[in-house]
Figure 1 (cartoon, rainbow, N blue to C red):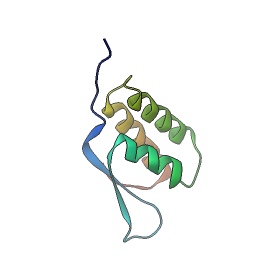
Figure 2: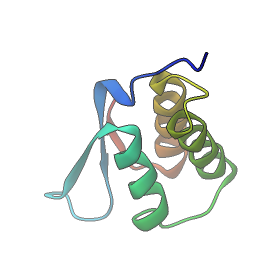
Figure 3: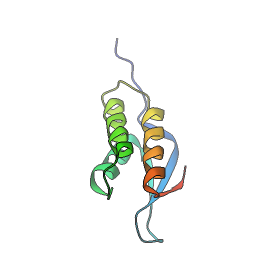
Figure 4: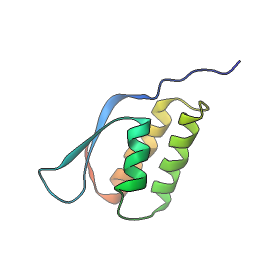
Amino acid sequence: MKREYSKVFARPVVVQFGRIDRDRIVLDVRDAARVLLREWREDSAERTAAMKACIAVLKGKKPARVARKAFVDAAEAARVLIEK
């Protein structure tokens, strides 16, 4: 039987790309995946790992906390993390 995991983060993650007044609040795995695909400026091992983690969660293979941690790690590495 396939286990159903929540795709919502326990706490939001806040990132900022460029402008100081444009914080991006990421609430769930779909939003994190969207940010990684459309708004991320640089490619890195951390970004790739976060994308893979988001896919695993969206497929129901991992809990949201796995994608959240990978997303936070990528945001820290890219220096765009404001609040975790």
